[in-house]
Length: 83
Image (cartoon, rainbow, N blue to C red; front, side, top):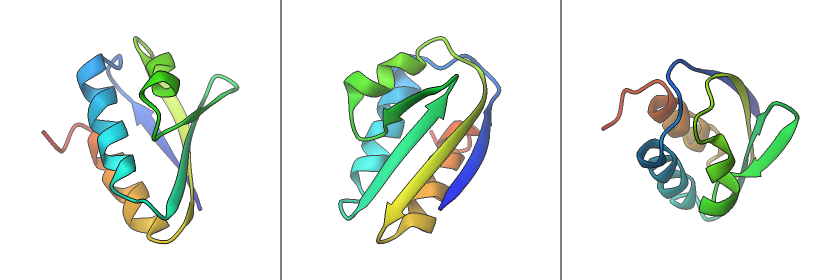
């Protein structure tokens, strides 16, 4: 399953940490971010740190159990709706 999200503000380490934490809640699901032709594992802080300072349109892909729930949770963080 694939969705797109617009990152309105530059990503900071706190938001990236929230994204990684949320992605790791879904153990049976593989989740990836794609931004500027770079694919990042959403469950890896090291991989996701590439988003630091980035803003704009990104693609989020999820495969496995609870893929729809995982994408919705991650989109809410990207949109700034979860604190």
